[in-house]
Image (cartoon, helix red, strand yellow):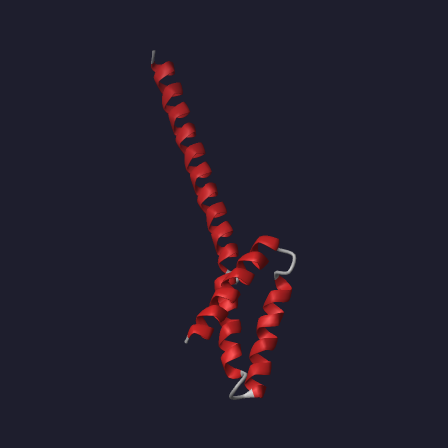
Length: 102
């Protein structure tokens, strides 16, 4: 009887350790996934940046050129991501339309 209780206690301890390791590992993986995805530029941000560059066009050509170069570099990084590019295009057009109304 004493041996069974001892084995049961050992089994429970091992099970708890395994569960804790799995939990810790899953938290670590989630952290890595979210930290990597946060560095991605959102299409809305790039579109807004480009709209801001367009506003410089009438006042400062040098500033416009520098601003536009940065945005075009960002667009180059995401040109293979079709979904991102489509969302960017839609946001950029919405931004231009809003500027035309003003």
